Image (cartoon, rainbow, N blue to C red; front, side, top):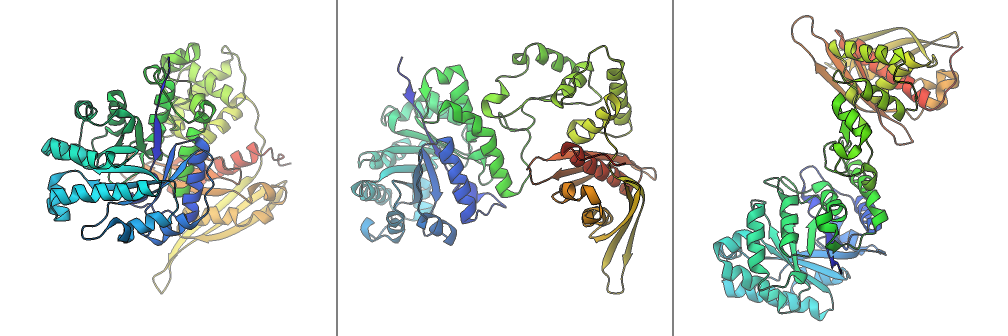
Length: 533
């Protein structure tokens, strides 16, 4: 049986750039585009040449993609100008991309209110714009803006907009759910009507996520006949985002109803790059990844309940719809007060500790975890602190830096500036070392006191030089004068692997210090630093 081809069009660099708080640099765009080309998507929409300096400079670069067609984006020609004399179309021609995507109105309401022209003039603009780029031998795509709303209001006119582009040689006619308000059953119904006029081999879908249905709408459109799918990495996009390609691509590949009928340009071995591609975007944006993203999120294959873990160990398919390694992800067994022996044993295996289920240290560790979580600890998000605890109970962990005492003070000077200072007395190989530092708060000062004085720490200096604190969170677990504080710290180093530590105390400084010391100990342990004498 011959499979039908699906075409993936990524619009992260254009639609994604419209997200609140996102501002791609040219270098950012180049990194993302290279990752997408390596993944093997069919089209990479680079942006809108001439619309802003970043996009203009991006298209001036020499791009030598192996798998993907770089696509420039713009809008249909303005009324009162010929296509040859329209500045916007000229900028797209000068971008020298093999493919061009133009957005145009397909809702008669917008033609009247937004453009202020007649319906016939809008059809002419679509037709002449298409003809212009087809004559230049560009692969042409027409994005029918607000198509589904337009179809509901005036189906005959909405279809005529599509025909105006198709009849002049457009390769793809893309049906856009621009405000994200259309539901899957409506997508199916309308695409089934459109396909009577526009062949499915020329139809695409561009879904926004305002009802949380962008992925479902894209799948419904494919099932109804479209063969071109637009979306972004991690569903990035304005308002609630776009269809998430990190969910769509593995669904097409790994779900039998789709994989038995369709094929992609993306090679099977490249599907394992999806998780890496997803997290690269978050790294570029300097934001924490969404742990709960399907397929690629850190929690997508996490198991917390003891019964679940027991079942997963016997047969992963019980609670996992795919093997996480197929998309470059991994299974995560969470340790918490809901844990049973199976959680503990499985988690110990992942950190390299083999132990018999009958070993009494298992119960000792389980009891310790539950006792600690009763007073406020939470190990399901503190992998490093759990590993340190487990190794101290199950096996041995070296003693590294002994903290003899510390002092933190906060004062306000005569100019109103708040100054936080910290002093810590450490011991390495029996030698006492005094470290001092200042910061924008007591915890930052304490952190600086230790990390800014690593040159004093003798044999541990080289191990701690690249240690960085990525994130710091405080949660007050109860109220009143005896409130308990939980502090979580996320750390990283030059090797790029992040780890999480936790501290709990009635005193926020003490809780922070516990989490900080765990971070130092974990860094030294994982880098195989020698023990203190």
